[in-house]
Amino acid sequence: MKAVLIYVQNVSSESLEIAKATYQSAKVAFEKGQYRKAVEQLEKARTLVAPNSRLGGELQMWLVTAYQAAGRTEEAIALCEQLKRHPHSETSKQAKELHYILKAPRLERPREWMTEIPDLSAMADNQTKLPLSVKNTKSSKKQMPPEREFVDLTQVNTRDNRFIWMALIVIGLTLGGLFWLSL
Image (cartoon, rainbow, N blue to C red):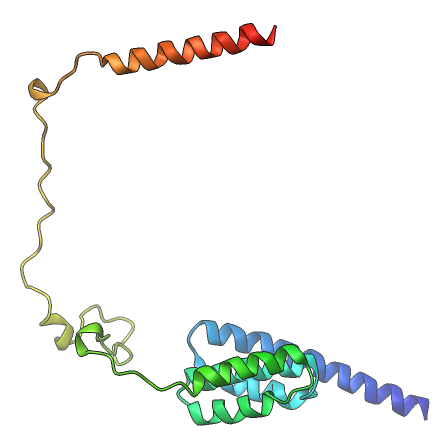
């Protein structure tokens, strides 16, 4: 009976280690902008962890964020609603705050606020040319670096500035007075 119990504990600790490793790789994928990969790995890790544990709640909060980033907003909201009732207080608090944000209305942005980024995924690695849509937006002339402006030294006042000498005298007197008072 003890051998079976030990085996079950080893399997759960092994699955926990696999879940932690998968969770870490999902976070790395998320930070690289690979949201679909992050969602897949977080879903896999979620099956290996107890959902009501602290780690399970943390993992599911990352999954909500990955769903949102991958454009799966409805799934993110549904999971957030479940996590609002999570036994770990920090997870439920974060889920309530995130649920509020996810349910907020989307505001229209003026077109001039947006910057269009060209799709470079179709470009082969060895190509150095930009797609035509990007080429046309740039001028064909090479831009020359701005010319340096030279200063005529005959026009510059190079005499000693009396303020600097006055400041040095005041600093010297102050330091001398402090030295004299410290004796």
